Image (tube, rainbow, N blue to C red; front, side):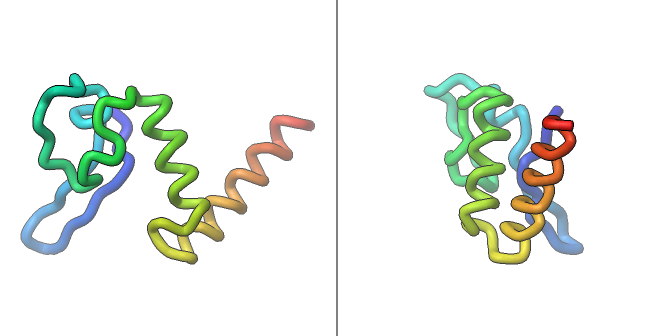
Length: 79
């Protein structure tokens, strides 16, 4: 089960995982993504989350890490 987002503290955590992105479109979801990845399917949800990180939706530091990992993966694939 792919977990896309986890937000939490010492009281507990909320997450966005397969329960959300593999759900049926007409089901209610109280996920931390706020419905952004709801019912997209795992592959699309992962791609959208990756792009959101690269675009800086979740902060500049994560965007820099995601760009680096994406470039590294591309270089590895091309070699």
